[in-house]
Image 1 (cartoon, rainbow, N blue to C red):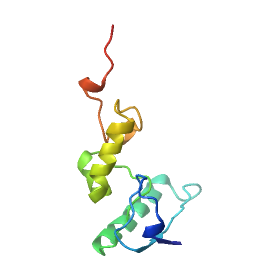
Image 2: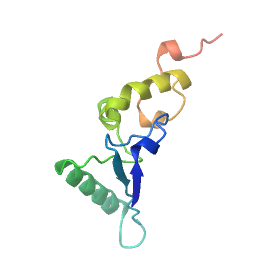
Image 3: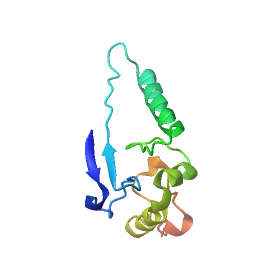
Image 4: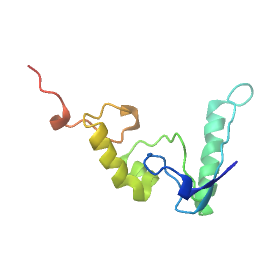
Length: 114
């Protein structure tokens, strides 16, 4: 567990941090090797997230598996607009991270064929 202070955090990144002065970074590293399967590990992670949500603990996943834009908007919360602006500025063709399904290529962003 790492104790962090938000005023020392670089807000120019797209990492989502709590709206608290002091917060903690906790990492759970599970092994899916041996008697523990990947399905069991994912189930355990989901249980941790569900518990945190029910207890109103401001938890965020580092590598979430969201598949819809509303899920991503909820993940970024108040930082969604800033993230969206950075994406439009630095990746206007929606080339980066297509598997996250945050932004789709639009006809206007596709290069013209000759």
